[in-house]
Image (cartoon, rainbow, N blue to C red; front, side, top):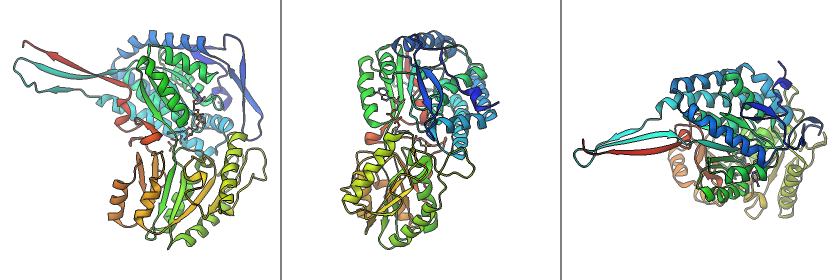
Length: 481
Ligand SMILES: NC(=O)C1=CN([C@@H]2O[C@H](COP(=O)(O)OP(=O)(O)OC[C@H]3O[C@@H](n4cnc5c(N)ncnc54)[C@H](O)[C@@H]3O)[C@@H](O)[C@H]2O)C=CC1
Ligand SMILES: O=C(O)[C@H](O)CS(=O)(=O)O
């Protein structure tokens, strides 16, 4: 097979692949050169309402399917992902730009989320609670929440859907998913993968088109009992407001502003490895990227020298070429946004150690960049960069590092490198984040709960906690026994 075999230029509604009612389409381009790779339907309210109806009709039968049958379907979905990993990865790279090695990893972790929740579903246990009075029995049971609306971002167009679809299907929920318009094919491929695995028609629906019209139809429908969203904090807040009208449950995986703190007693080479993967994975376009690199004064100059050498050695290019470590940014808006961060830092005294400009490859390629002399009054100290810009701040004391690291409305991921165990515990207790990496710059894994605090979101994805977002807990009181 080729990646084009998974490139669905239609929407999946009630088991049928269809175009938009209007026949209108949207072009999808390759960020490497802006070439059109295909089209998708420009769907909206009517198409979404039909998808919700299909999911509503399919829900009772799927909910009542035996647990083992639902788990076996997930195992088949896992195998479909891994049997087609290369083609799905190439489709992802063509529409999003990330290097093939990263796309292969994204498909693989998506399959791991599916396998994880096939196992977790068998542990969605209830309780029998000892009653305080005689003659009474108290049961607590867990049930599928129902039809789930899913809206996902362009930067991890497959795995961000994986960690929503897997627990939802594991619990017997049905799905209406809207992938990002810039990278729709990896999301539409999940519809094809569910067909391949043998899911009943209407269980998995994928619609594309006007984000506002599609999400509005989801919000207005009482049948949609949950919204799970990954994307910017700004849009997340809008969706939370919309979900309130019918009191839908929400899961929000939103923006980040990760501090990466290196103490004098760190293993400097491990800290450099961690900084490189945390900062430059996906060209810096991840919500858990190191957004601020704080380095203690004693190790600062040695750290910057090593980081410069590693950054300048990175291979930038088309993600389909062997050895490429950084692809293009998603679009020109993203390039202009990082240029604005660079200009702001330079105007406030920052020093460009390497990079700082558009790449000689042109288009949306941008040089991996390090800026030293960074200060808290620079824009990137408080805003998500979402690009290959590494601001380096110098600090003196542990107390100062914790204070600076917490100086943000975000609270998704943070990282620290130290060999002092006591300090590691003080950081764990003092840093206000949903996820903390101690001596690691890449911490996302299926067995751990991924998610943030403050304005980085609500809810968890992965781990045993990730199942909770797709269940309703019921209490039954039986008297007169
Ligand atoms: N916490 C996490 O796990 C993650 C967070 N993100 C965040 O997402 C952002 C980058 O991804 P983007 O796709 O640019 O985010 P975005 O918020 O612009 O779009 C995300 C999704 O929402 C849709 N959307 C956009 N405007 C909408 C609206 N008004 N109503 C309904 N839907 C709307 C888009 O079509 C897309 O499907 C960054 O802020 C990043 O931090 C990205 C990935 C993971
Ligand atoms: O979209 C993102 O930034 C992802 O959440 C990053 S990860 O899950 O691949 O670490």
